[in-house]
Length: 286
Image (cartoon, rainbow, N blue to C red):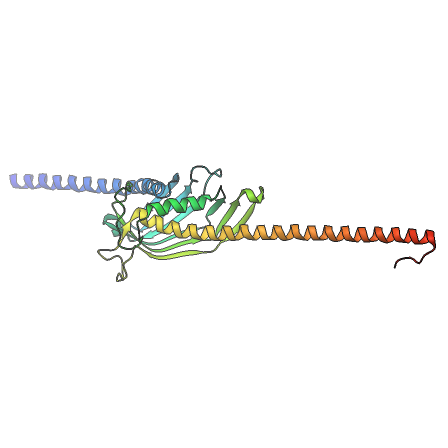
């Protein structure tokens, strides 16, 4: 009987431990969304030197699905528009088990229908400034085996490495906000931007190899740099075209005005000659 009572006590203790572990796991999983939200805001702001905010993060560890709602990238200091990027939803698919490892394996990141604002400043633009900030953050040979300079401060959450299999930035519209447009609202489409294998090693077939993965900040920087290149190219091409069309319109107006003046002068001169000819009885100019 004593042995049975002792066994029950042991089983009871084990049961309590199991319950505590389950509760701890539930709390950990539930708090992952907040951890990810803080990580995005901290790492993103460090990389871009812009204020980054996230409204909400919905994370399902079992399904390996992550949805980020209303991610807003503010503008660098000195720019007037409210934001550079507004992403209403970012969908992420990842390998669930990798979340608990040193290298988080992200299958894909899909950003659809983002709002982008291009603001021209004195000698630069908000996008160009963000790009410079990212370039200053990235180590030489980013995406390859390279160490970050010692003076670069590591943001919180950069301990884990990332592998991003596929990144898609699609169906974006760029709102041009430039002084040279004189307040005219112009929106131009941004071609689809796709990136494959951020942080992957060439010999990695499935998942991530032991030496695969790069720091979270570097992965974010690589993806954002490619987006910025696309935005800057599309925006500057559109502004150049607007400038060219405007110049042609001015040129046409000027040419039309000159032709009108010439015709007017010609008609007036012809009329004067006719009046003079009538007075002296000479033949008129035809």
